[in-house]
View 1 (cartoon, helix red, strand yellow):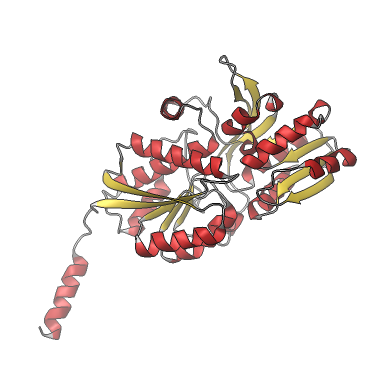
View 2 (spheres, one colour; view 1 turned 90 degrees about the vertical axis):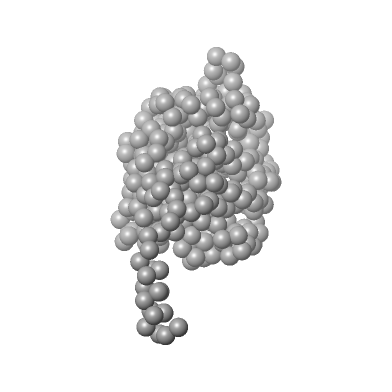
Length: 387
């Protein structure tokens, strides 16, 4: 074959329109064991319900979902990401709970120009100067929940707050968000080991510091243990306790029970949000899994529906990454939180609500939406994003 003919054949091949893929592979890495396992399991269950609601096919394509447990270990997560991206050649990645786990897989996933749809962690750097065309978060920036909590605590007039959070990037972002809106003083600021389950020392520190309120962020099993020990130490009698929705999610309420009653927390979603998509999600999740969904499950569900809508919009031509990116940015799906739109950094602009733990008609501990703290709230980092 002469050189001229070869060039013509190559040019012709390049000019051919992309065909719809036969199937889509989704790599799902999450924390499915250990103290954080309840969070990853909720995200997985929500995602699988979303896939079921899409008819078992994302965007009409046969879907292979590869689920892996990172064991809350960055080195394990990196090995899994390498396998999924390089060997299994997944088209999209999702599932991660914790920010330090995401940091371990970023170079592999984003470096390969594989789309990552975050159903949970929202690092501040990826919302700002390090924003990336292949990274989308259907959740929030890590400090957005605590911004709402900080405003609530500030509006209530507290002046001397004790702050408790785990010592990892997500914990630091959460405290930064709280400080952005709470303008009073601090009786103490303590960072614990990620995964710690005994808080006797920290509770003693709080008692000695004599704050007028406590703000804490301890997700999953950490929060469950803290709340039980808080109640056992008699701290709830006189000292107001404030947190984010992550510390008062539905699974935590079910595990802890009465000590959570009356607690105020901030979140972007709740069981009682009055829209058709949310009502169907809550009802079908409870029917399928035998429990009420939490924030993590709602985010996993929305991640599946976002992917489904985008793949459908490009008519299954997922190799056209520019078109798929535009379709993801359009976010033409019915979110359980109501209206959904991305900012230019691929993080949501959304409402944040004040919720209070109450007992429902069946005697279950649930969150009740009592006020809107922020309406159409953007994150604090978007101005630094040059995308």
